[in-house]
Amino acid sequence: MLIKGNSQIAGIGAYFPSQIVTSQELMREIRSEANYGLAENWLNEVCGIDERRVASAEETPSVLAIKAAEIALNNSGVSPVEIDAVIFCGISRDWIEPSVAHKVQHELGCTNAISFDVTSACHGFMNGILIADNLIQASNTNNVLVVTGETLTDMTFDYMKQLNNKEIPLKNVLGTFTIGDAGAAMVLTPKENPNVGFQYFNFYTEAKHADLCKFSLRQQGGYEGQMVMGKICSLIVNLHKSLIEQTYRKLNWQSTDINHLICHQAGKKPHIRMANMAKVPLEKAPISYKSYGNIITATIPANLYGIDFKKDDKILLAGSGSGASISQSGLVF
Image (cartoon, rainbow, N blue to C red; front, side, top):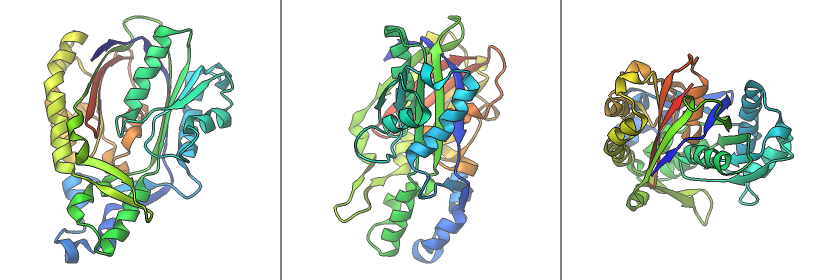
């Protein structure tokens, strides 16, 4: 699905909890060498993930989202009362009902904003951007706050307990050891110039692969499901390959025009494959996985936040999530 962009980014924010847990600490906890024949540095060497941030009990998804949103609002120059819509896009939630966006709206003082949640696994933030962009195009909306807060390391620790109790095979859940916690936020406003901001979105879903990465709550508490990382990562890269030339044609870009490739990051190997897929040098594809792990829906906005953009920089955003869903978007600063 190709959709013309109508918005630009006015401000971005990211927030990371202070607690650091290393990959070797996780592997040591499940006695990876003795129990599974995997070296304690396997996550470091194979996935490229050295450590991740872990939220405290007080740092709920809304708290991480609010802290990131405060930064984004400050950077945008937009006041909370000027926000017309708040969209929360995380997998993690403070509660089942109401939407987490309601808490974000209230705590930030966005009293004039409609508020709702949207979820699409790791792809959720890109869906939030698309909805915000269309609100701006279709109504009198001027300022949309898209936020996320992810605290899914609780899944990692739950599966560690299940592994230590010999309840599940490691291969089905090893992907959860790549996860890190983070918050991110973005303020979107109407374009001031058609040549800046989001140019086009290209979205695609192939839902027959939903079982490759699927989780639910167990009746006895905790999580059940699987994350088959090798298959899901290969699938995602292949889906991106099938769309990239169409995306470049619509944007009227060559791969050599791109200043930055910002893509979802599950680890080192898929990140390299994504850069090769887009024909973009790896040095133009900033990484967050090494120090933060797979930060789920926060990945793309957090990586954007970390870049010092120059005027007219061209950015290719490559989002993905289990399901499987992908998107490619052209953004000009």
